[in-house]
Amino acid sequence: MRKAPWASIVNVASVAGQTGNVFASVAYCASKAGVIGLTRRLAVELAPHIRVNAVAPSFVETDMVREFVDTPEKRKRIADLHPLKDIAKPEDIANAIYFLATKESRFITGQILSINGGRFTC
Image (cartoon, rainbow, N blue to C red; front, side, top):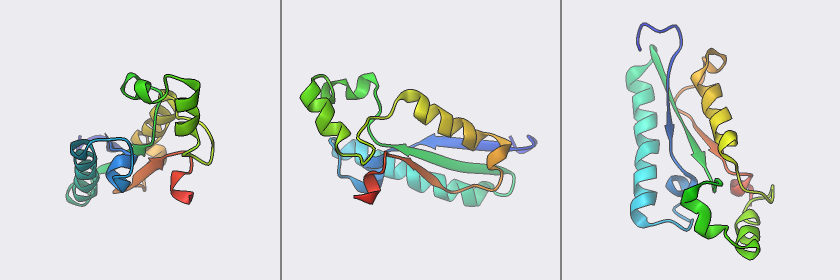
């Protein structure tokens, strides 16, 4: 990777690792907080050759969160956690990862991109 013109690592963390305040286990929150710490430290150790960032999504419509959105009432409860009043789709996260992996983000490293529909504004 050091020889690539714009080498980049993009880790996947979670809002759970940033707040611990979601419907997740202690182990999940701790592991995602660890990903955030790892991302920041690797960004320092691998610079200037490899950039390291992470995305930290809130709820994403995947099999993992199906039980939280399997009724209209549950879906509204989760959507209402976000000022955008919606739940992320996998492509929302994929697009952010793609950007962080490209040369267009060449001056971004050590960052945790929160993809959370505005949850931190509340």
